[in-house]
Image 1: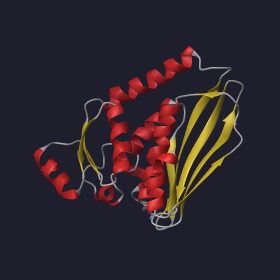
Image 2 (image 1 turned 135 degrees about the vertical axis):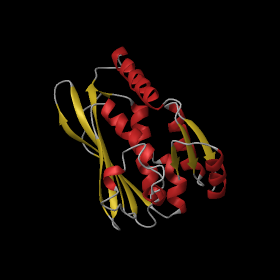
Image 3 (image 1 turned 90 degrees about the vertical axis):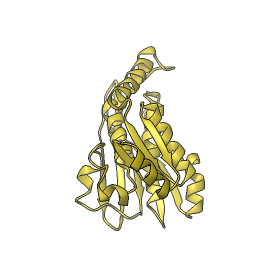
Image 4 (image 1 turned 60 degrees about the vertical axis):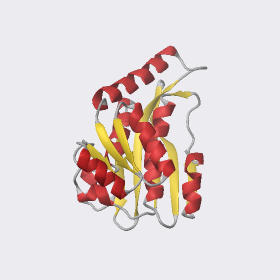
Length: 221
């Protein structure tokens, strides 16, 4: 995650800090989906932070003999989020025409997917934010304690999670307007992987033309 964001961090002179607490050994889960969720959070944090830092954290919340509940956090010193916007942030299809979506970069769909990933992995997702001071986006996942290499049942669980995401979002047509290539590549790849039809616009003028010519379920700007 850190390496994929280095160019953006350097361009904005932001510091990236990582903090990983003590975790059980040999945890097994869907690493690809966890990375997608972290990239979504971290990409948004960099985009909306003009000065200061972005902090990535992972830590153990609870465990039993068979599994561990892990919490991931991405904290920023960015613009923060108004209290009235927070309840709608993780709702995929409530923001297509909302001014809050345009203001906060159309993050709703990506956050909804992150929430779905967390729920499929036995956890949840949320945000703590103070307007004007920054935000902490978090999600939890339950990971199995595995012995040795990845077991067949774990691979099956990963495939099942991807199938559910594709079932829920397959064929949904969206417009992605993003002028930063790395952000665009990350977002488009994540959306396409869950079966969405993505049209990409490099700027506002191109997005407007596409929006006038097509019917989109959601705009990401």
